Structures are given as C-alpha cells and as structure tokens.
Length: 172
Image 1: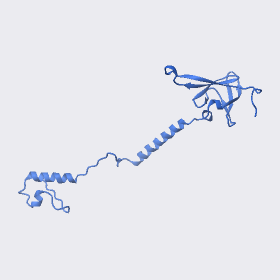
Image 2: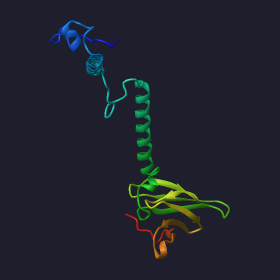
Image 3: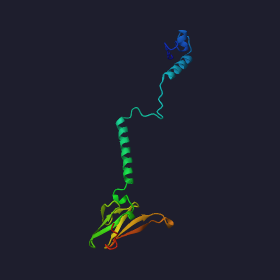
Image 4: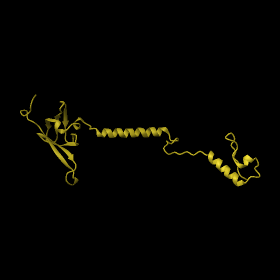
C-alpha cells in the first residue's frame, strides 16, 4: 500500500487518490509518484557556497581576525628601521670621536639634526642594511651588502668614515 500526501490550504488536495476520494480503486504507482513529487517539494536544500558557516563559533572567527591583524602589524614593523641610525644614509652622519683601545673601541657620530649616537662593531647603520665592521684609531668602516653584479654574486661595499682633525674641521 502506498502513502497518500495531502496538502490542504494550498490549492486543495494533491494526488490522484486524494482527489477521487477512493483509495482502494487507484493505482499504487500513481500514488507513489504523487507522494514522491509532493515530498520532494517539501524538502529544504541548503547551498553553503559563498555563505558563512552558521554553526561556526564567533569567537574563533574573531580570534583568527585578530591574529591576521597582528601578523600584518609585525610585517609593517619589520619594514620600518629599528634605530635612527638606520633611517638615514651613512653620508648624513659625521664621525666626531673614537674612544677605547685595541680590544674594544667605541665611536661617536652626529647626524644633521645635531644628535649624537654611539657605534660599536656590529651596530646596524644606514638604509642599505650596513653594519659597522671595524673601528680603528682614526676611522670607522661600514659594510653594506650588495646584490647582483656578475653572475649574481653578492658582495659587500665598504664605506669609510674618517675622523677629522680639529684644524681640518669647519666651525660655523
């Protein structure tokens, strides 16, 4: 025996058996087809393409958004130079003094604004990722990495800052 589906209030009864009123005389195949067609029209189908998951907790989404913003902030901070010595070119600094002995020397440079900075071996300096390589009695050697050249070899460009004598300095 087949299933008879009847919808009232939406345009009357649906199905041949329900419309004739006699269930015994109708064909079972027609009843089954009508029942399947009406049952298929009552089913709801959800297509999740392009829609957010309604069952995903909001806390996870907020946490992932916060982590992505923190990662972007870290990338921006890595792009910015860390010290004022890295925000200007090497040629904008003037070597004003060197102190210490052969075991350990420290140099003092002055920028165009009149601020003083101390240098030691390994201090990053300049906008091209230069580092102080050597401090001698009268000069500071800064090495900047260079890329390219012949056959893609990398090298280092050496920039020297010489300590001027008092008589050679120009006083304003």
